[in-house]
Amino acid sequence: MLKKQKKGFMQKIFSQKLSFRDENGQEFPKWEKVRLGKLTKKTGKKNSKGIKYPIAAISNKKGFILEGGRNYSNADVDIKAYKLVHQNEFAYNPARINVGSFGLQNVTDTTIVSSLYVVFETLPELIQSYLKAYMHSRYFNQDVIKNTEGSVREYLFYENFANIKIPLPCVAEQKKIAEFLTSLDSKIILEMQILEHLDNQKKSFMQQMFI
Image (cartoon, rainbow, N blue to C red; front, side):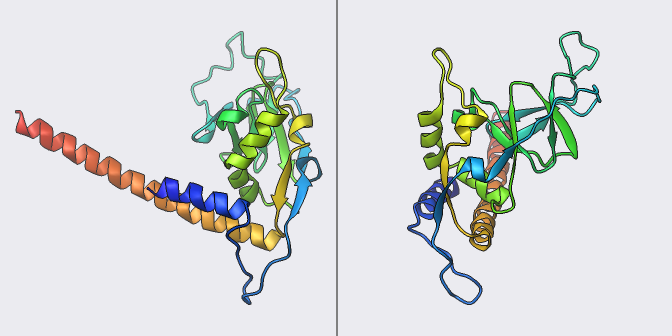
């Protein structure tokens, strides 16, 4: 239920049908449409020194996931070719960003990801949590589809990602939007935990009935 409500709020917010006000009750400045190339910077240098940073993958549901059991001595793991992702940088799989395979690195100071991934950071005028929320919207996904390229499998490399224009409020309004959506996420997690608990209770009762 809350997930559907969140989607509805996101659609209204990013289409500017739902607006926020500042601490004095005044309207924020008008939004702009700005290319991501002006709001982000490509990073992701290779781990050329072969430092054994934690290896991470990106899940379309959980974002960054550390692969704790990965064996560095495995012959097919060339960690020098992997890319560095520092805390508060984004990374995404260019072949799977259309299904939400991207994330904000907030699991450790530095991790490494496959050389296939695109890594970037945001500039000060773009709040990370705002961009993360927008990247989960249908508006962003529509732009991803328009900008992918490839004959067999479609990819969104940084150059095309940088061409996507996003609606950009002022920093203060970005923070308000991000805080509002984050509070909904917390409620969704709580709701899911309650449902899981009730489901486990139901299974337990069913087992006891047929003993």
